[in-house]
Image 1 (spheres, rainbow, N blue to C red):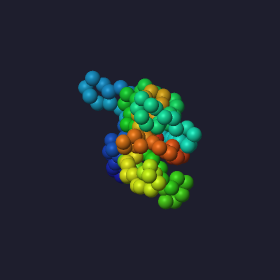
Image 2 (image 1 turned 135 degrees about the vertical axis):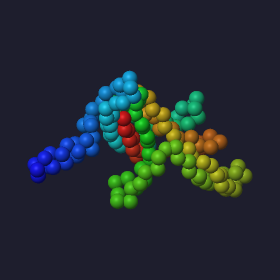
Image 3 (image 1 turned 30 degrees about the vertical axis):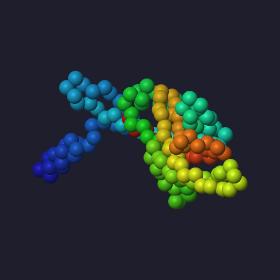
Image 4 (image 1 turned 180 degrees about the horizontal axis):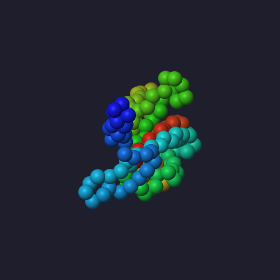
Length: 160
């Protein structure tokens, strides 16, 4: 009798276990049910100060990253996010998911020998395509005098 109880418990436990394995992918069946579709990866995208390029058409800076892991399947079925990482490499590191807008000030010459303060916002956003990610930095009112983006680490997170 004990043997039958153990077998029944094991059979019930088997029903509660996931019906898929990690890193499998199948298309949904016509009835709407599907097997597990879970894959995930994270990549650090380091934008060095020299990797930023200025686009005169968009009037913004961008950094281009080749990411061959973003295949057409990932692009079609995935959830893709890019975050800016602050305090990278420390125990105080944290992420801010893009888009991110920060408000800044800069000291400028008023043209009459006096100094003034300019308030502006910096907006960071991204675009994703098959095989690449681009991160964009736009300054409000396109105030780019003496401005070049600094080195910024970003974290690409993908689940599909």
